[in-house]
Image (cartoon, rainbow, N blue to C red; front, side):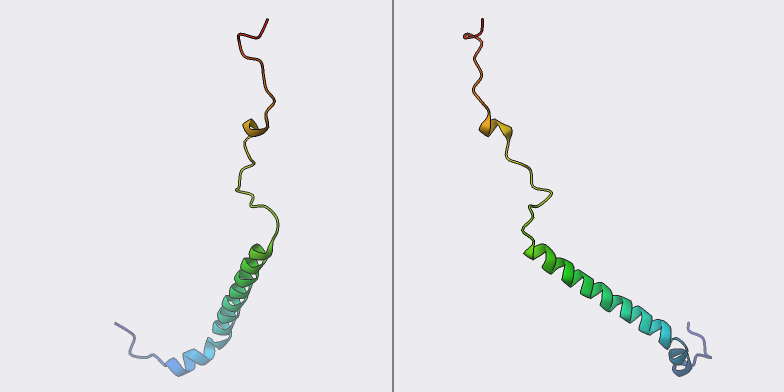
Length: 69
């Protein structure tokens, strides 16, 4: 149950600064997220999670067991 002595009008006024700071923080976080997504979409750098092509595709020929001496 809620308290019978609540005054939501005065509580809202008393907490206005904290509520504005929370909203400002959420707006800043949303702007940073949008900036980061746009930066990542425009970046020409390769994806760090993407592996290099395998070295076997460019390896030099090695003699087989029959050709070794």
